[in-house]
Image (cartoon, rainbow, N blue to C red; front, side, top):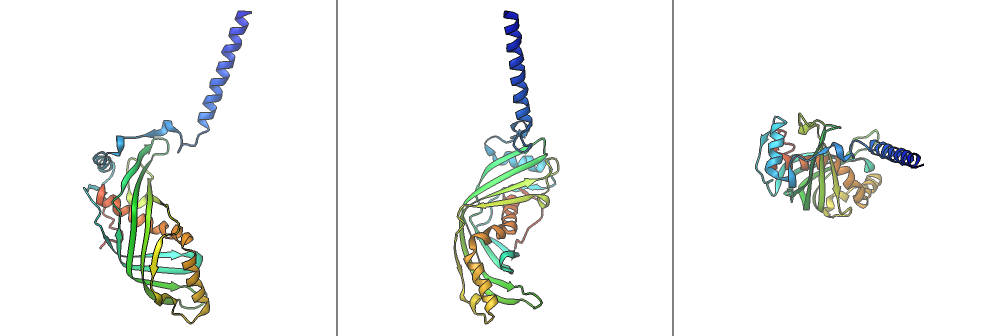
Length: 241
């Protein structure tokens, strides 16, 4: 009887262990803690710099990011309003944040680097807005823009841990405040075309949605400059003066 009980208990524990193994194997490789390695405890910046230069062709930089960071120009497409915005002589403030995540995933062979800033802001004295029309040339207006985003987190995902390439990294941006403070000059609304005027008004009233679209491109530019000034220079100089 004792032997039967012992065998039953062993079978139960074996099944439980198998179930646990199955549950662990169901984890996505991006979430499985067994795949994650943290080569730099406490996000030590010198250690991160050494890791980058040892696994890429970049040159170590010691920072900080200039404040303000001056950018020549860059273009953003606002698809939900059919508007293109060309920002010129841009001044970006508050990019010197803190690294809040840094790890490599041995299974997916990806590297993740995340930085957090507290008071991100930018202004451009000359923004060229274009309302793109069907079968017609665009309506163009120039104006100034000043925007305070506040807190934001930039996450860069490098596709290869053995050959880090900033030009191939994906960047995702999370802005805490979806309704930032901004100022736009009055020249944007001096339009006789009612359809174009309505689209520009839509652009203003849909600012929270526009921010998500803008940071698909803008976040990559900001994060690339943070990495190139503070960690390692890949020679990209995205939109820099």
